[in-house]
Length: 190
Image 1 (cartoon, helix red, strand yellow):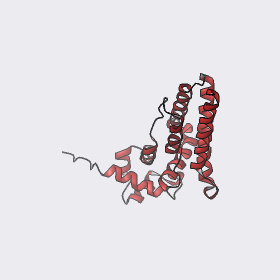
Image 2 (image 1 turned 30 degrees about the horizontal axis):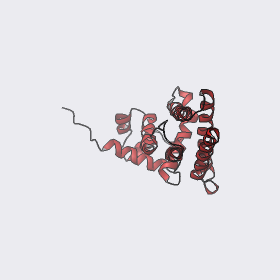
Image 3 (image 1 turned 135 degrees about the vertical axis):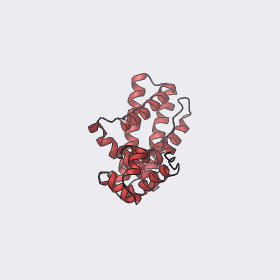
Image 4 (image 1 turned 45 degrees about the vertical axis):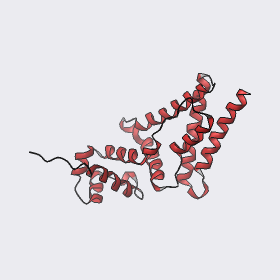
C-alpha cells in the first residue's frame, strides 16, 4: 500500500523556494536546480506541483495571500486607499517585493506559452475598480478607462520601486492615486 504524502512537505517546498527566489532570477530556476536547493531530486517538485510553472504559481499565491482581496463596489472612497495599499503596496518587505517581481516576470512571458494567469489577475483588478467607479457614478466607458489608468499607475509605482527602490515610495504613490481618484468623485458630486 502506498504511503500517504506528508501534508507539511508542500508548504515547506513553497517557503524554501520563495526564500531562494529572493536573490535568484526566475529564468535560472529549473526543476532540477530547485531540487538541489531543497536538498533532494526534482521528484518532490514534480510529484507535488507537476511542473516548475505550477510551483512558481504556488510561490506567488503564497506570497500574495494578503493581496487576494476584492474591492467592495459600495465601499467609501477612503476604503480605496486601503485596498490599493493591500493589493499593490508594502514592497518594503522582501516577500511583497518578490511577489511583485514575480508577477512582472511571469506576466511578461506567460503569453509565449499560452498561459494567461497574470492577464486574468490584471483584468480582475481592472474589473473590480471599474465596478467601484460605476457604483460611485461614472458611466461604463469612463469607469473602465479610469480603472485601467488606476491599475496602470499602481503597477507603475510597483515597477519604479523594483527598479529604483532608493528613490521610490510605492505606498505614497498609491495613496496619491487613491486621493486623486476620490477627489475626482467628490468634485463630480459637487
